[in-house]
Amino acid sequence: MRYNSENMFTTPLLVALLSITAQSPAAPALVPVRGPATAATQEVAQGDGPIDAVPPTSKCSKDRRLAHTLRYATLPLNGSIGDSTASDALAEFLKRTPATAGVNALVIHFNLTGGEHAATLALAEQIVQVRRRMPVICVLGSCSGMGAILPMVCDYVVVLNPNNDVSVLEWTPASDVPNSGIAAEVGACFETIISRSTDRAYMRFFVNALLDPATDLFLWRGSDGCPEAAVTAPAGIPSVQLASGKDAMPGMTGSQLVASGLALSCTGSLDAVGKVLGVEKWIAQPDVAEKILAQIQERRSQEFDQLSLGLKTGFTAVKNARALVGGLIEAEANARATDPRQQKYRRTYSRNWTQTTSTTSTGSSWEFTRVGTSAWRKNVDFSIEAWQQVVRIFEEASAATGQARAIAATLAKNPMMTINPEFKAEVVALQSEVDALMAQAPALTVKGDNAKQLIAWLRNNYNNPAM
Image (tube, rainbow, N blue to C red; front, side):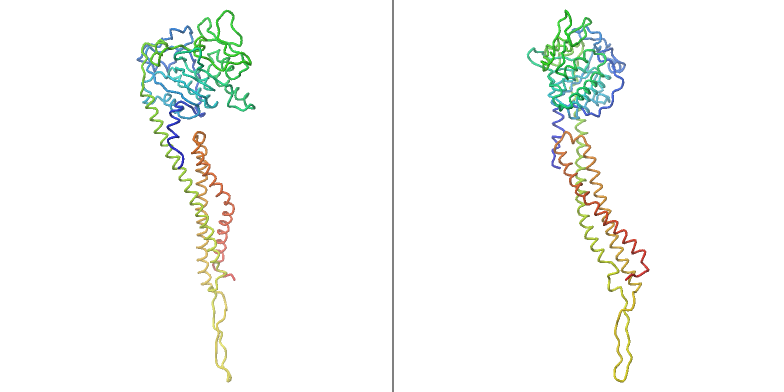
């Protein structure tokens, strides 16, 4: 095949290890995003101390309690969302595979440059599902485009080394949607995210402002220490103005996120995040991501081999079908030449004797008298065999065409069509070959039917010589 297997797996794995497919399974009943630990979390955290840690900088009662000891795996979410590798990686946490058996917290390091709406919403769905098993902590580098929503879906957002001059959340509302579809797209995004954040009242205003540049937005910490939001500024409370009607701001700096109560501040690297979260033991599990990556690479390699085999089989079927079509035309011409009604040697000749007179001598001559049944049957047998060969070739050509058509249709549904141009080009080329064969199908069907009808006629007249 001409497409590059390395590009199919290595690049997406490095660029978007946690991007997601839109086929994520529907999440069960949602648990509070920052509520008390669930039974599932309790089970994961057994042996790691009571689940009563809470960020010392937080005064919000809704913040999710954490175990004293967190053994965390770090998964980077880099580049543009759209590849399916991240879905596979998050699925490993949902399945509790051996690679994730010793992990009771997931750190997602966000550095996003954009992404598709559907893939972003599906990723939000899967993050919610992982949170049913363990805390999910966002460590924010930067996010732009639709991906700016994703940190808000995690249990905690931690900004590394916040800076007033650097935006860490940036977006251009609905920039990847045609003008005619903005309203519907914004509506779908809004309802999806809000339905997964029912315990965060501020999310309704935050997401609306993110998607609609004409919306005002103010963020602040309420008297209970929890983030709050509204389209008007609160009285007597310092707030962060995120947007101002038509003069919408393009994003938020790390300092604004911290000041608004949406994020915690951390100076240093990932190693210092545990202290910010109030966790006594913050233990990295550095080999987890490598194990998951290896599992995904092995699985993708097997899938790639299957795709390569499928394309090879499809093109081979096309080649066979073409050869058979040529053979069918030749076989049909040969069969027509065996028509017993056109064979001279099927006739029986007999001698015509003349009488002897005084002036002439006795003589004789050969002339045709009748059709011989034995000769007729012999020629019918020969002709039937020739037409049966036509039918066999027709059926083999039809089977080869059907095989190529089925393979092309299956490959066209593969997700690789949307993420790998070279694979897509191969499938399109195969489909073009199949279409050319299918254009010949009606004429070939006529030939096959005629051959079957002639065989039936010959058998019906096997004992009835026809002139």
